[in-house]
Length: 269
Image (cartoon, rainbow, N blue to C red; front, side, top):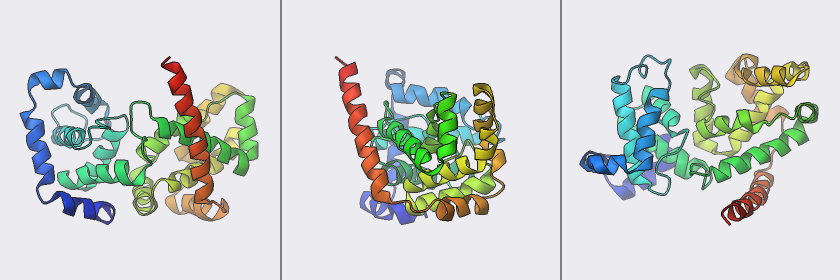
């Protein structure tokens, strides 16, 4: 599936491209690392990546060492992004099932082909815009839940932003998120809205029973317990929540991107 997304780019860049990037990583001087914010952040985040997984639970674990190579290689591959929160988890999950080079290309596929531009940047501009789009979709398709969240002034994006940045890696066990990744690799960003709404639909009854903001937060923090399996989630996401026009999502995204861009411009004044 990764080759399905990035096969042409791999061919254009030629065999051994990843190894070329690794040589650049290895050639980076200590001074370069100390003055490169992306490389410094990578080193800080390594220990926070899947800390309960046996392959990533020690600083000297083999997978941790490989993860650093993949993330640093990507920083040299895409200097406009460099490194951003969420990339460590995406790469780590890939390394559980793919070899090192394919994990790098998986990262390329996610960041440069499947997610919109400006998703993984220092401002997370497009990812933040998508949370506003999701808020609108919740209002349209789950109005009772939307009203309940407004009643307690709950910012849904506090929970869902990480869902979109990591494709639900931090939410579900591998039996669910691997199936979700397969769909994501075929259809891209749009399915994240479907799955997010599906998760919220399954959690809705529990959230509506909450009588305090703390209870709502607790319920939204453990949404995985409301999703019995991928089949149930997919049924809701792709059947029960239709229609789901891509054009509508893109129009909403552009509207909120324009708002956020103006807001960012004023904040710099």
